[in-house]
Image (tube, rainbow, N blue to C red):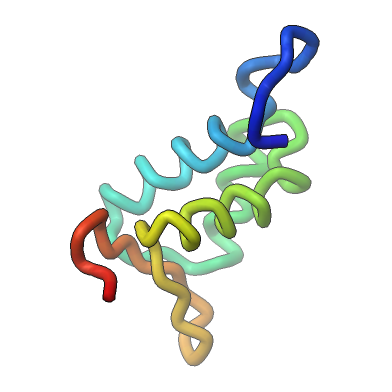
Length: 82
């Protein structure tokens, strides 16, 4: 869910998981898909379910790029995408 309601836990939302992934990617610049998934699962309860929507959200915002040959996700920043 993107829009939290009064009944949703603030740490178990797509936006929170996206923020955690973005912070990790800013530090490392490039990270493997499986390592990011483990990180989300370890950090947030239900992170394995929220991982893919959070990754999709970051991709749609133009902040990350996926490289299928290396199965890695790269942080590209807010202004570097075309």
